[in-house]
Length: 425
Image (cartoon, rainbow, N blue to C red; front, side, top):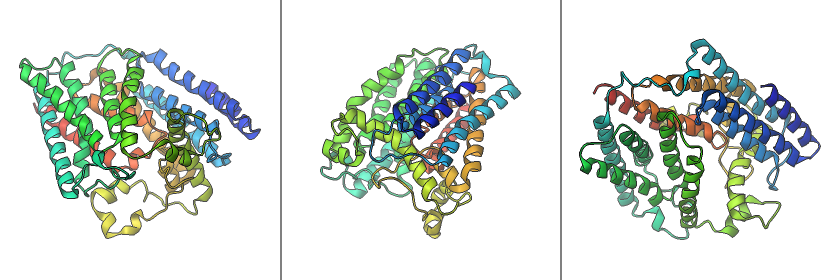
């Protein structure tokens, strides 16, 4: 942590003098060092602490470059929160690791006691694909449109929701991970089931495309990839970049299908260099502006909400938000109305300020340490799917408040149900 603290202090100092490229460069160096530290020690390419450190710090580094007119110098409280988010996560991870001492033996997995669970995994795939497809058809027939085939309506996807049903529609994102487990466990002796597993995977990927949901498509592939990485002793470092390249055409296609042309996006992003290519400015602003939105919260928040924001999944999944609208009536402080994504710690600060950020980071670090420690002796295959989901949340820690999102908890609940089913087989 001494290296990170030194780089962080340097970044803060450079930012105060307006040397933004040096400020971002210092944090990029720290991000690379922190990831390599955990990868070198464990040999685990998808190490949860390594992923969090790399992408949380790397995202902050990009934000420090200040390439958009939407960005400004951050409040001191913002700098403190970002520092505590990483150091709290790191310290809690280290404390749990030393307490249980399971994380240094990655790669020597004991599979002797784990039963072959190809059949229950296949049945989970069947059930999830059937439920998701039925929910999608119900929404499409009820709303009388499919977002992919709608033109001139940039927000067609955001309106393609039927309360309660859409959770089941998007549960298809877990099917590719189940397919990964199915084939890693050896597949079926029946070629028909193997072919059907491929068909179900294609169907599950087609639903996000039909919904014009870039995020659900990327999330689905990413969880499958991290599930593979968690299951295997080793994973080729080129797998992630290769998948990213393969996803680019689909990302562009869905961007066009959303009626988001270059002029529309450039008008929102307000890049200082107006000639910057859209394939650079779009990912940049979708990462960097989330940190700006956090700073906007720090500057504008009149009072903390003491848990109400982070308990939103309860208000949503129980329907209490309809009975008591005030539970969700708090404003979202952002730099621009079109750019509403925020960091993982946005609601933690909204609820409890600096102590909330530190406590939440410590909880996440402790959970991450437990998950990494359990990898070597994972007996239930759904444990790898859980690990894959958590890895994505760490990877995209700059993107949104994952654990204040009811969809996240719905995925976790579905994974829990499947894990219970597999444990009974």
